[in-house]
Length: 398
Image (cartoon, rainbow, N blue to C red; front, side, top):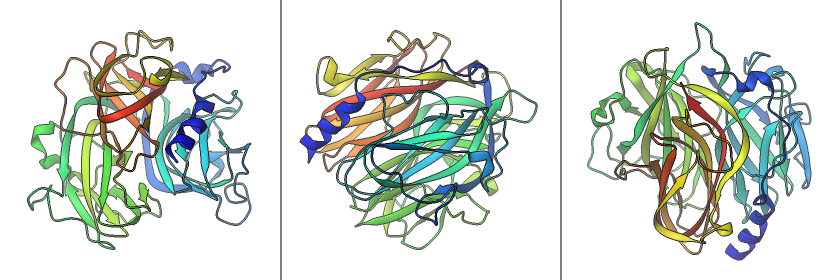
């Protein structure tokens, strides 16, 4: 299966030819949250935001503002959670702004046909209306939205990068940010602001998190949302095979700064933070659109690695400016065997006790990562031998 996975992902390793981004996407953009909402589910009856499934080798466009999730027509980018429910193996899935040429990159692979999710910040196309989705093989697709980006105004929120930091780990001693594990079918809230070593200020209105589930067996789905609010009909990640699974999530701070979690089945949970959104102030960053581009593919260079690797993002061929202070990346690992974890962090800093993704079953895995930087480079650490692909879709800068 791993050899099959490598051959499938080669389809998306060649580079990118794409029309210039819309002028609005090249402006400074800031964030407006919405209540987590399911905007597309092709498992539903046929319609604009429902079925049929996307047939293999075809694409489909979704005019997100016309859905039921209160997205304005002028949205320049969306913060999404993308879930695939394949009919069999899925070589890869790509999402991009409608009206632009399909990029030769991927955000997700499911070579064994399992249900998988990945977060994505996607620029909107056709006048701020739509995103397009391509699937190499037939699959159902679910799009959940938690917010959108627009040009700077008095109401939208600025991003503040933080050194990656572990907020909670239920595998540790019992406590508000520790054990016990999450019981299936039960909500548990986490007081994020009590992780004082992570330096998250009380003004934070949303957290940029990496959520990792360590299931006790299979895990149908896990949902994360602002505490004190009704549980939304969305999911954050799925682990149907019971393997350790991570996904990025932008989550609004709930009552007392807490976030709520709900698993369908017993699981341990790890929460890492890399930044937050708050009103504009000194040090705040805006999002800038970037033509999707492959920053790194170790299969085309020095080959698989384990241990530490430094990646010069602004010095790559992707035309990322030196002003960038955090990169929005899609990280894909193609392991040579079981991969305990991969960690991404700012170059020049000590390796943090966090993880970005896991592939303990040796199957290709992807995750969105917002990675801060102080010098244009980031570091990657792989616990076991793997190839690594890094695609950039946007960046944060002053």
